[in-house]
Image (cartoon, rainbow, N blue to C red):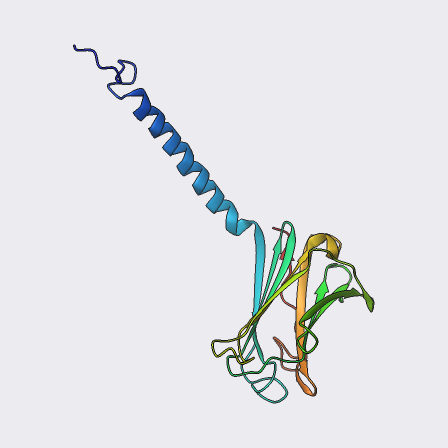
Length: 196
């Protein structure tokens, strides 16, 4: 049997480099699979659909069609989708319920489109200082303040680091109100989202 510098009898004819490559490839594959498995489980997500055209003036102003609430380990994220035909309202208002045994909202947020697209978190009528709150608003394909979606996000600690949270939403444009997001007569709560 001839000697080969990159083969060893222990590796069954495989070179040490190749054996090391197979091991590192297997480890890398396992790490990638584990990270993909953890990704979706990192946040509990609930959604609520709302009929098109049920805002005060039909689909003209602030007609919300879908609400998604994600409760992650570090952040609570709300995504509001508007009817593609609707104009953006003057404001969006959301209410967070963080205590299952005490019905009602403990926190709320207000996103005003009329005055510089500002995002405010409040509790009991008082503004809450919350570093790390974020928003991203994207108009629909025509870029003319119709359709699109709003995403707001808060660190969990700003909401008292709850184990569970649920949400209800409304929009307003003067008297054009979609205060029935998810319901016929009034805004409906989403299901509870547990911390991811």
